[in-house]
Amino acid sequence: MPPASLADIHQHFARLTPDGAMHIMSRAVAVETPVALEFNGIGYAVLMASPGDLGDLLTGFALSERLIDGPQDIIGHDVHESDHGLLVRAQLVDERSERLLARVRHRISDSSCGLCGIENLEQAVRPLPRVTADSQAGRDAIFRALDLLQGAQPGNDRTGAMHAAALCAADGLPLLVREDVGRHNAFDKLIGAMARGGISWDGGFALLSSRCSYELVEKAALANCPLLVTMSAPTSLALKRAEAAGLRLFALARKDSFIVPAGS
Image 1 (cartoon, rainbow, N blue to C red):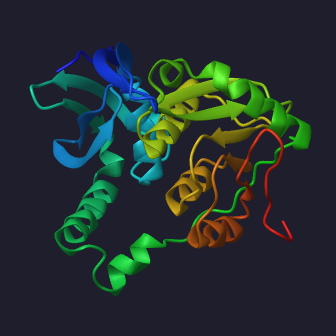
Image 2: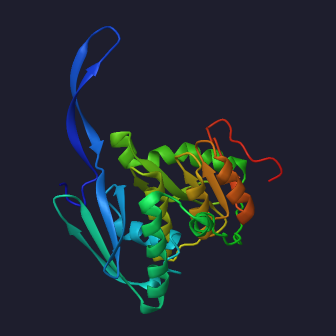
Image 3: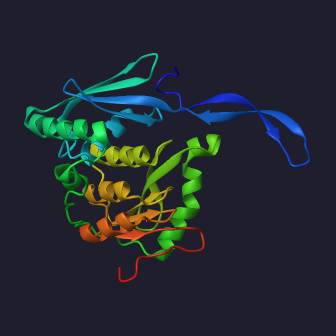
């Protein structure tokens, strides 16, 4: 198992071309490993993730799961390596114990047979808070961010296999970027890093190198993100949840265009 600080490893491959030639080459491969999250001694989730920025991942995940209200609710955490992956143990303040246990009960029933029963269906589409932050970013800022993001993804530059989530300023400059093999993990890492650093959106926006699923919309709304920009298309539920939360959503963002839901 690679150490938690290792972003990628090198592997030899045979590169085949249309003319029948074969070339042996070495290239970086993104590390993907099981990361188990434990809160107050309770195993909560296992994520398939990149092993960096685990404190940010833990905090962002706990915020997205509504286990905590802020990083101050995490007393501390530590990381343990094993032959099978990484274990991140966190201790929450006593005031969050009841909330944790309630969510664990739902997750146990969810994992046994999927989202079964009216109560669990309601949990899957719990009301989202209304977004109160504003973004001053215009179209020029979106295109600038798209142009600059590639240079702010060292992990993906090496491996070609990592998603990025970026906090971009109102003028489009990427201010903070987190990478991971999982798009949800990358956004959790960004949200966690912002929360731990006391960083606000300050008129900026989030740029994600992924499709726009409803989970990413929910993470954005819970983080009070004023504008979510994704490089691929949204799903129907993502659009519905974004509208309900008052979250501005731009999608299919390319260097020459992006789409905006009509009426937004």
